[in-house]
Length: 394
Image 1 (tube, rainbow, N blue to C red):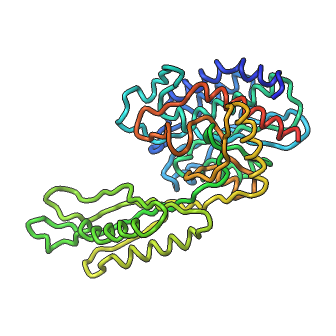
Image 2 (tube, rainbow, N blue to C red; image 1 turned 180 degrees about the vertical axis):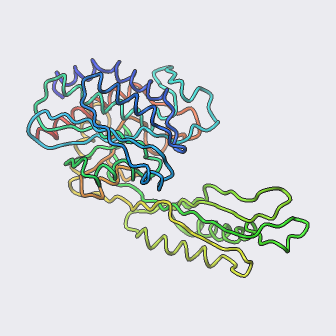
Image 3 (tube, rainbow, N blue to C red; image 1 turned 30 degrees about the horizontal axis):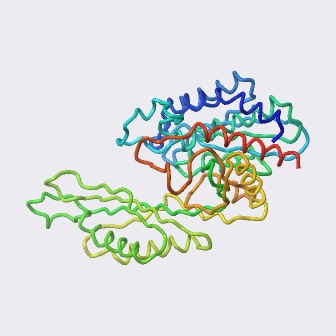
């Protein structure tokens, strides 16, 4: 990295940490997906720093299809000169905080070089790093290509209202995309995932006369048992992730609902896996018990397979990350399902690289006390700036 770029990145690190802390202080849990206050604050913050901020709301009728109400995406574009366009794409929505915290999940506490809070790692630190890249290039007087920030809010809902919406509406057409990821690996291939909802509808009755009803909860038992057997047969994870049903302790359950998360590896056909899984569920259902069965797709994300352009993008990121961290930063296929897959599906070279710890192993705790290293924020920002500069000037 040239000295002006490195100097600009290091000069902006206090601002990057402050931005990350403010983002963590704004709850953006999804579900329920109420991120409007945080996005409004971020749009104002970026505008006050001199960036031209485009605000792209998603029509409510479309958002409701994904169980969200108001969703807005931000795009910041800065043309430095002739050359390609590289988008840095990161979401601000997070998993729910949960109850296993020893610290305030929205306190943005800094201790021993770590910042704690929901979204600190996934992926608000990436938003802070990507803003730092844009501002460092500008401060150093860079003169090649265009950088776009794509800041979205539905990563936990599949990315259909974020990256897919921006592409589908013709609001962005970058030549390459760097998506939220980890600073210790560059992810170029992604798992796929199938989310299914299974609903069993029976008939309510008093438990003193269960024969008057149709027990939806009892009807779920053989299906769940068959799913557990399938889980043991296949190599990819299959999880029954939520279950609900019944109306009272003395009432036969008239409805049971559960959801399934089935991971898909590269080379597998997601629609075929879906058809086979539904057939397995239907075969396990006893139609004669008077309980109706419905299976509904919530999400099907096909795996992302590396391409030659995405491999070249990943190689540049890996090389500069190794220089910044002083160790090898491998290019991997990882068990993640990122909204950035929509860029890859559109034929755009895509790789994931950001601030957090490795995808598998240290620091990946979705239950509580999520943290990110501020040293990693600085080193990843240096690596990203160097890689983006090289790619824009090529």
